[in-house]
Amino acid sequence: MFDQKQLFAAALGIKNPWKIENVEFSPTKGQLDIYIKKIKNEKVKCPVCDKECSTHDSKKRTWRHLNFFQHEAYIHCKVPRSKCDEHGVKQVEVPWARPGSGFTLLFEAYIMQLMPHMPAKAIGELVNINDEIIWRMIDHYVDEAYEAVDMATVKNIGIDETSSKRGHNYVTTFVDLEISKVIFATEGKDSKTIETFAKILKKHNGDTEKIENISCDMSKAFRKGIRENFDESKITYDQFHVIKLINSAVNDVRKMESKINELLKGTRYIWLKNPENLTVSQEKLMKSLSQMNLKTERAYRIKRSLQEFYKIAKEDTKAAKKHLKQWYFWSTHSRLEPIIEAAKTIKRHWDGVINYAESNITNGVLEGLNSKIQAAKRQARGYGTIKHFISMIYLICGDLNIKIEPNLS
Image 1 (tube, rainbow, N blue to C red):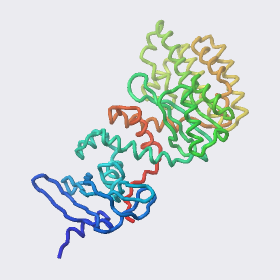
Image 2 (image 1 turned 90 degrees about the vertical axis):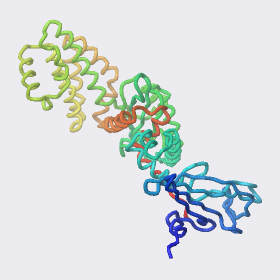
Image 3 (image 1 turned 60 degrees about the vertical axis):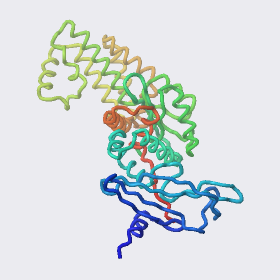
Image 4 (image 1 turned 180 degrees about the vertical axis):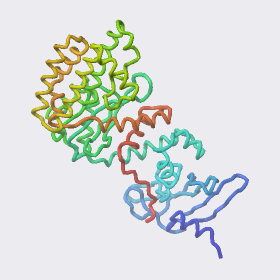
C-alpha cells in the first residue's frame, strides 16, 4: 500500500531521530505542509560538542521548502533543545536547514542557482518572498564560501575600479591574473583599498612579498598603496589605460583642428579605431583625410607607434625599450600640445610602462570580468547596497565553492 510518509521521508532524507508525522495538502490554500517530529526517547546531539544528550524542551518552527509542483511547501517541526552537562541548554540543529534560517537548505540551494542569472527582485517575485530576504541568503553563503578562499599561490594581480551605481560610487576589484578570478573587492578606490587587500591576502594564506607583479592604472592612490604595502612588487601600468591616455590626446588634437577644418567634426570614433577595424565607409573617409596633412592624422600615427611598443614587447624586450624611447622623442617634438602632455605623463610613469616588456601582464582579464559585472548590474538595475554589489561580484567572478548540502548522516 502507498505510504506518503515514507515517500516524503525518502525525498527529504529524514532519518533517526526524526520522522514524518503527517503530510497535508490544501487545494484551497495551494499549499503542502509536512510535519516532522523527533522520535520519542531518542537522544539529540549538542550543537556545540556533538555529544548525545537528553531533550530539555521543544519549540515549534516552520521552514519554507521547494515548491510542490506549483504549490508552496512548508516543513513544520517542534525542534527540541538539548540539555548538555557541559554546555547547558542549546537549540538542536536540524538536518534540513541551517541555524537561524526560515528556509530549507534545498530551497536556498535553488535560490543560489538562480541568482547569477536573475535579479533578486525577479527571483523574489518568482518564489513569493521579499528580495531583501534573498539578499541576506546570498550574503550569508558568499561570506561563508569566501572564508575558505586560499591565496597562498597568488603572485600576479590586477587592480581596477568599477562603478557600483551612477555617480562616484566605486568598488575596487583585485584579480588573480593566473586564474582570472576576483579574489577581493572593496568599497572605494583610494590607497586604503590596497592596504585592506594586503591584510586580506595575509588572512587567506597569501604573502605580500610573494606578489611579483601588479597591473593597474596610473592613479596616484594606487601607486601610493602599492608602494606602502607591496614594496617588493613591480608595477605594470595597464596597456588599456596607457592607450586610453593617448587616445584622449589624439581626440584633443582633433577637436582643436576641427575648428578650422569642419571635415574633422564627427570623426572621433575613426581615430579611436585601428585600421583593420574600420568599416568600409570609415576606411574611405580615413584615406581621404590622410591626404590633407592633418595634425590629427599625425597624432594618430604617434598613437599607432605607441601601440607597436606592446606588440614588440611580446617578442623582444630590448627592442621594445628602444622603441619606446624613440616614441617619446617623436611625441615630445611633435609640436602637438596634447600629445606632448600625454608623453610627459607616460615619462612620469616610465618604469611602470616599460615593465610591460618584462611582465607582459595587462588588465585585459579585469576588463572582461568588469563587463560581466556591469551586465549583471544593468540587469538588476542596481543592488541597493555596496555589500550586495560585492556579493554579486564574488558570485559571478569569484569562482567560489558554495556548498549547500543537507546533513543526512
